[in-house]
Amino acid sequence: MLGALLLLAAALAQVSLVDFQGDPAQGEILAGLGGCASCHTLDDDEVPYGGGYAVVTDFGTFYGSNLTPHPEHGLGRWTFTDFARAMLYGRSPAGHAYWPAFPYPSFTGMDERDLAHLWAYLQTLEPVDRADRAHDVGGRWRLPFWRMLAFRQGPRPTPDDPVLRRGSYLVNHVGHCGECHTPRTGIGRLRWRKHSLEGTDEGPHPGPSLTEGLSDWDDDDLDTFLVLGMEPDGDFAGGGMGSIVSEGTAKLTPEDRAAMIAWIRYVSER
Amino acid sequence: MRNLTLAALVLLAPLAHADDNAEKVREYRHEVMEALGASMKMSAMIAKSEISRADDMKAHANSVAHYAKLVKSLFPEGTGPDKIKTDAKPEVWSDRAGFDKAADAFIEKSEAWVKAAESGDAAAAMQAFGAVGKTCGGCHDDYKVDDDH
Image (cartoon, rainbow over all chains, first blue to last red; front, side, top):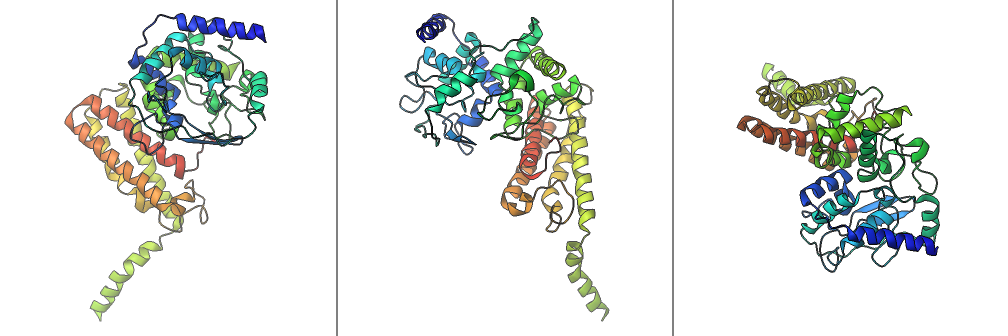
C-alpha cells in the first residue's frame, strides 16, 4: 500500500515537473474527440461545460461536473497537477476516488502533453456559475473494490508499431470509444481485452459494433464517416457521435484518422 | 347538380388523401429518404474532392431543401409501426412536437446550406453541409429504428 502511494507520489511529481505550455487550439480538438461536452454540458445551455447533464446508468444517476474556470463551482482553483491526477488516476484534488462514469479508466493512458493542451483549453472557457449536482448513487464503499478489480492504470498494451500505437491511443484513451462501443462485465468493467469495440446494447449510450458492424465498410467509407459523419448508405451520425465527428475526428490530421482506422481493423481481425 | 357534385368532390378530396394506402405512404417516404441520401452522398463526393464538380453543390443543396419541406407530411396518422412494417419509431406520433422540431431543424439547416452554397464560399458550404447531415442523424437517432443493431 505504501509502495503504491509512493509510486503515485512519484508519478504526480513527474506530471507537475512537465514544463510545457499547452496549446488551447490543440486542447479544443482533443476535447472534441473526447466528446467531453456531451456529458459536461446541459442540452439547453448556451455556454458549454457548465455541467449538470444526467448520465443514467444501472448503478445510479451521475451528473456531469462544471469544467469551466469558475472559482467556486468549476475548476478555477485547480492546478494542472490536480487535473492530471483526475484524468490519469481518477482522484479528486482531495484524494477521493471518482466514479468511473467519468471515464478515467480510459483517460489513464493519456499523454501528459495532451493533458496540458486540454488544461490550456479549459482555461479559455467562460466561467459558468452553477454548483455541481451530487450524484444519485449509493454504496460508495464499493468504489475502492471496483478500482481494485477494474481499474488498470496507464496505456493499454499495443503491438510495437507506430501507427497502431497512435491508433490505440486515439481510440482507447483520448476518444474512449470503448466506453460506448465495448461490452461490460456485471460490475461495469470494460471487456477490452477480448471484446474490444464489439458493440453493446446496454448502458446510457449503447454503441454499435465497430468490429462485425463495419465489415462491409472499406477504409475510405470509414474515413468519410470520421470526416463528415456520413455512413455508406447516405445516412448520418447524429447526437453524441455526430458531435464527436464534427468537433473531433473531422479536425484530426488524415494520418491520425488513418491510425484510428488501422486500430479498429486490427482489433476486428485479431 | 353538377356544381354540387363538384363541390362534394372538392370537399371529399382531403378525405381521399387521408385514406391513402399506408403501405404506399411508407414506400413513398422511403423513396424521398433515398433521394435525400443520394443528394447527400453526391455532396460528400464533392466535399471529399473525389470529383471536381463543386458547382453542383448548389443543385444538391436545393434538392435537399425542397425535400426537407415534405418530411413532416410524410408521416400521417396510421402509417406507424402499429399498423405497418416501418423503421419509423412510434415516437414520431407519440412525441409529435419533438419530431416536428427535428424536422424544422432539418428545413432550417438545409436552407442555410443553400445560402452558403450559393454564396460561393466553399468552406462555409462544407460546414453547412455537415450541419445538415447532423440533423439527419439527430432525427434518426430518436425517431428511426437503427438498422445497424
